[in-house]
Image (cartoon, rainbow over all chains, first blue to last red; front, side, top):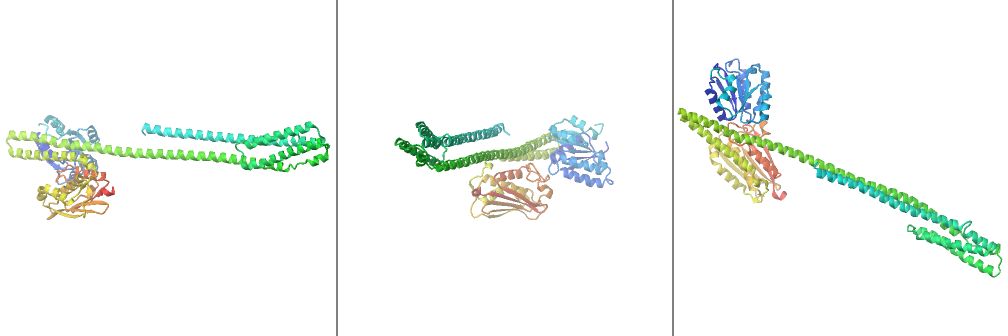
Length: 145
Length: 435
C-alpha cells in the first residue's frame, strides 16, 4: 500500500479515534491518519485542503473518510449532505469513500447512511472482530496484510 | 375522536331532533284545540242568529202578536229558551273573552225583553185585546241591541282568529329559533371539542417525538462510552503484553474519565426524572446561600479555570418557590459558565443576579467565557446538544432540563450570547402569589 495515502477519521470521541488508529496500524495501514472532532471540522478541512490540493497531492483527498453519526455541532448525516455538495464542487473527492463508524445499530440509521451513494460500509463500534474489520476496510488496507 | 364523545354528541343531536318534533307537535295540538273552540263559538253564534231571525224567535213572536194562536206563543217560548241555552253555551266556552261576554250579554238582554213582552202579549190577549198591528205595536221590542251585540261578537271572533294564527306562527318561529340556537351551540361545542382534541393530539405527537429522540440519544450516550471502555480495555491488555506501561496508565486514566462521565450522565437522567422538579414548591429561597453552596461544591473546577464568582442579589424578601428547581437552574448555569470559561482571558467571572419585579423571580447568570456561535444559539436548549467537543465533559442534558423545568412552572429562559465575549442566561419564574 502506498504510504502517501491518507484517511480521515471524523469522530467527537478522542478515545474512539485512538482505538481505531491503533487497529488500523495493527492491520497494516501505513498511510497518514487525519482526524476531525466533528462534521464541521471535517468540512472545513476538506474545503481548505481541497483548495491547496496541488501542493498536497500525496495526501489529498483521503482515500476514505471514517465517519461517526452522533457528534456535536455537525453530526454524521449532516456531514454526508454537505459532503455531497463538496464532491460536486471538487471532483477530486469522487474517489473518496465513506465508511460509517457508529455505536448505533439501528436499522433506520443504517438505511439512511446507505441512501448516500458515497457510503460504502457501515461498521457498528465494538461489534466486530479483527477479521471483520479487516474485510470491511479491505479497500484501504494493503493486500498482503 | 373518542367513541364515547362521538356517542355523546350523536345523543345530543338526536335529543335535539326529538325535542324539535315534540315541540312542534305540542304547538300543533294547542293550535288545533284553539281552532276547534273558535269554530264551535262561530257555529253557536250562527245558531243564535238563526234562532233569532226569520223562522226563529222573532218570527214566532211577530206571528203571535199579529195573529194570535197559542202554538205561535209556544213556538216563540221554545225558540227563546233555545236562544238562552245557546247564549249560555257561548258564554261557558273556555276561550270566551270578557269583551265577547259583554257583547253576547246584549243578546241576552234582548231575549229577556222578548220573553217579558211575550208574557204581556199573552196577558193582553187573555184580557180580550185582539191580536193585530195594535198589539204588535204595544209589545214591540227594540232588537237593534241584539244585532249590535252579534256584530260585535263577529268582529271579536274575527280578530281572535287573526291573533290565533299570528300567535301560532310566532310560537313556531320561537320554537325554531330556540332549537336552531341549541343546535348551533351544540355544533359550536362539537367543533371546539374537535379543535381541543386536535391540539391535544398534536402536543402528544410532539411529546412522543421528543420521547423517541430522548430514548435514542440517551441510549446512545449511555452505550457509546461503554463501547469505548471495552475498546480501551483491549488496548490495555495488548499493552500489558508488550510491556508498554505508560500507554496502560494513559488508557486506565481515560477509562476512569469515561466512567466519571457516565456517572454524570446517569445522575443527570435521574435528576430529570425527579418528581420534586414538577412541583412549584413552598420553600423560602435564600438565593445567595444557594449560589454560595453551588460555587463551593464546584470550587475545584472553578479554581482550575480561575473563574471568580460575583453576586448581585437584590431581594428584599426571600421568595417562595421550589428549592430543587432553583438549585437545578443555578447549578447548571454556573457550572456551564465555569466549564466554558475562556482560557485566554485574564480575569474570568460568572456573575449571578437575582431580583423580584413583583410578578416573577428574575435570575441572570452571565459570564465572559467562550460564548456560543450565532448559528448554534437556537440549538442550545435541545436535548443532548453539545457545542464544545474539545471542552466536552457535559451530558448534553443540562440546558434541556432547565428549559423543560422552567416552562413547567410557566416561566421562561432566554440566552444572549456573543461568540468570544460570553453568555448571559435570563430566567424568569412567576412568583407563587401570581400563579
